[in-house]
Image (cartoon, rainbow, N blue to C red; front, side):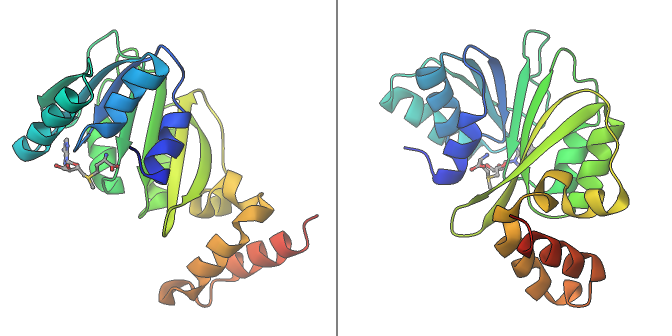
Length: 199
Ligand SMILES: C[S@@+](CC[C@H](N)C(=O)[O-])C[C@H]1O[C@@H](n2cnc3c(N)ncnc32)[C@H](O)[C@@H]1O
């Protein structure tokens, strides 16, 4: 029922959490979390047509998820501890999260572009970063964010502290290097060299 990318995100959610899935679209992730992880879930999307689809899936899977048409975090209540935002641009996610997060202690976010801006914003917001990659026809960066303070160096903000330490990510960095703007990036060269010599 879920794509590899959404399943990867679902696996990060703790059982019995109170979840808000922002930009839920078809609602399948929200429904999966209710069914398989015993979560209380609200799914929201800015588009009517998305919520109509989610409501059809709710019926199809006999799910107990609440779906609403809503912008960003407008349905955030004080009992929600986990917010998921996947499939939106970094700048939109930053705008959405730049508000009072009430009792949210876990954010699970997937964004692909402007990653340095996103990592810096998350630290200013008072969350720590665990970042991983999932390959589902292309690479997706998935951020598991919990409350706390930590510091990154400039290269860690640019390329992701967890990513540059993991040998398994070498092909991701090689792919970044192929993109025109990174062709002569010495830091990227350094990361690839370091990862290829790692045991
Ligand atoms: C690419 S889909 C992602 C769906 C799903 N989260 C996923 O990762 O597969 C993006 C969805 O975000 C919704 N969206 C865009 N801006 C939004 C906002 N400000 N608040 C809520 N939903 C939004 C769109 O209507 C669309 O359904």
